[in-house]
Length: 162
Image 1 (cartoon, one colour):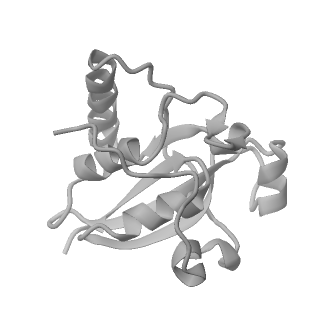
Image 2 (spheres, rainbow, N blue to C red):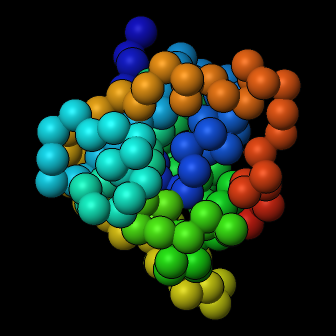
């Protein structure tokens, strides 16, 4: 079995986690923070916008069942990747759209999808970054929508890719 990791920032991590958890081949989805300039940030610090972190999900998946490309396409299809100041009603730098790639293959797939979206006429705001330290968010953020029996309010699925 070949477990790999992918990191996606698409606004509030609760809704992102919700959609990735439903995919066959996804072993776990963990909400957390990446990209900031302090170690072990708290939710409060990240929400202040002062730490530079983004709300991110770590997706652990079996490459024999689901491809990174399929996950990356889902990432683009569950949030507004054209929004530059946050996601939906969530405004702030911690909610920006980004992919933290773990290797050149993930980087190339992500870049190719962005080019494809631009050819469709979208102005893509998603930024690509090399993988940095992932900090797991507090326990009360994990598996949020399933534990609370709620549906995401900032995210919804919209098919874009064939």
